[in-house]
Length: 262
Image (cartoon, rainbow, N blue to C red):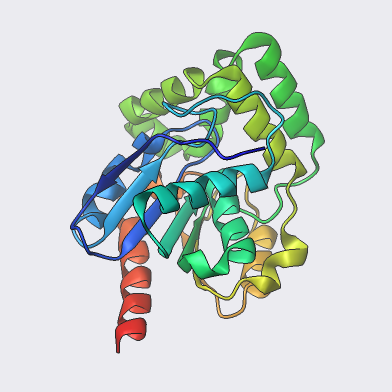
């Protein structure tokens, strides 16, 4: 499938190192609002919506992970960006890994947040996709957002939870379902050794979607990777622990930039 012109926003100083933020399944670039405020003080931050999400086009499925990665390459080309530091959450983390494996010359560093090279057997993902196609994203929104945050955070931050639930519910059903199938079909474990970019892995200690074993697979599979586990935090660690996650991402990218310029 050919690339699509995904919706994006660019913030931060012109000429600063480019940091691209890639979203989770069912979210838009607005999931990064708090982090982008911090990160754009130092980096040229590019946020975008996956195909089928937010304000991006919704081509008919099926999609492949290579399609989502190709959209990023096309976006970088449109922006005239040769290399970017790439940070992805959940599905966005898989897109980031794909770029590190297949487009290494475009990747200055990787930050993988609440993600896995493989999210388990495909059947639950394919079943969810079928449900969304039949009944819409509203039918799964509450259950999905219930896995994104710890119960304590959810109880104390009802407006955040509702905003994210509404984000899922407003995602076009075909875009969500086709990307859900991408997650179900993706297994990057055999290819992790091809990643050469400096990599930071940020995990939530209470993430129901990413087990400790999945985090260990990333740590062992990507040479020289660094792992930070934030506790408490569930799947969307970049929102639940936005300040800490943003600091870790900023330090990671800054460290790579300093190495390259020294």
